[in-house]
Amino acid sequence: MPKLTTAFATSHRLWVAAMEEASRGGGKDAGLDHLLLALTIDDGTAGQVLRASGVTLERAREAIAAQHREQLGSLGLDVEPLSDGPISLGDATGFDWTDQARAIMTRATAIGETGATAAVLRALLVEPSGFVTAVLHRLHTTPESIGDLLAQASALPVTVPPAPSDDPFHRSTTAFVPATPGATWALVSDPLRLPEWDAATASVAPGAAGVWIAPPQDGRAGELGPPHATVDADESRRVAHWTFWWPESLRPTNRRHVIFTLEPAAPGTSLRVDATWETASTRRRWWYPAARPFFRALLWFQVTRVASSVSAALRG
Amino acid sequence: MPSPSPVEQASDTSDPFAGLRAIASLRQLTDTLELRQVEAALRAGLTWQNIADALGVSRQAVHKKYAKRVDSSIELPRRKPHA
Image (cartoon, rainbow over all chains, first blue to last red; front, side, top):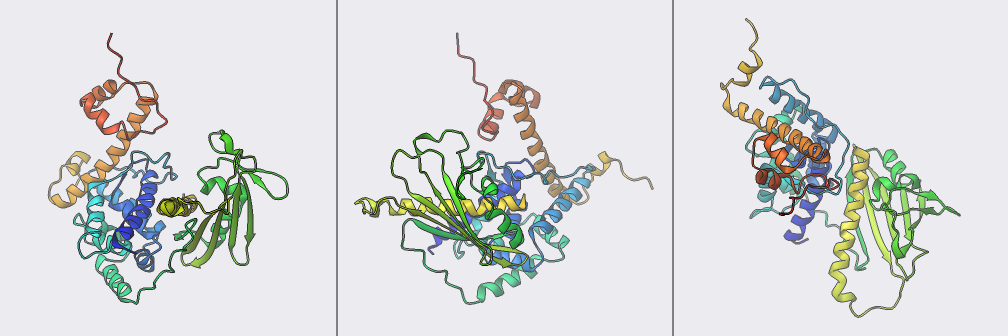
């Protein structure tokens, strides 16, 4: 993947996860602590190294809270840090990196770095305030130890990810979910829990023959009418195949497929999300080639949003 | 030996680097609390000027800092049109 694309994808994934963690304290600034938490649920090398070192999401949350509590205590303040509320991004406006966190992200894309999450973690391990070092000490590890593991992991032969599908209407992504496969399966296979990961759905009601009807959140379905959904859930393979369509639409509409595939990945679950639009017309339109990058970007945002919504719903 | 009072503890400058890092934690806490209070004030119908007066800063400063950060469901006060 080109460096710029890697850097953008990394930055977006970490941005969403860090903002979600910041929102648990009611804040809108994502700092070094939130960046570290975002890295603990990274699907790539950085997340794997952190989790293998015992720096899991839950343990890191506790260590960060304890570190803030100690620092505030040194000022004579006996207060609990504000960090244990639910994830609540609202419409996600107003969030920003702190200067410290932005400097780390900039360093991770500097000359000689790839912009991947491993580069972000490398930059975070040498952040100058000492906050991250103090948190890691609380977790009985050190920046040097994690840096060594990261170097070893980076020296291993790179597994080339499968080339993206040639279909402009299909994209997939994988994410680490800090919850058991059972808990993740219970979320992604249950129609009643659809609103927890599909931002466009506020509620679902059962229709006929296993169909679920999901009116849009603002109650205005417009000319499309309410979306209908079915789920084909195969628990033995841990594959849940969702299909969405708009039978009351006044014009031809495309069917949307979202497929979840789960695999155990201690101490959580590896989640693959495939999103496909099944076009209503078989006729190839002349403008498809020109619009191809737009469709690919749109679908990429859709799959990453679904994956991060599943993760957010399960880590609360 | 009696333990230091909170003020003495807060004024301890024997380890300035640790002290500065503690200030960063305090700033993170106060920034979050300030945002909550500003949002509560706007929901209660206070103006940007009221908020600025309470915080002891200019209306422009508080507007610049919070206009795009507060919950978007809050209806923001507008300046009264000139007569």
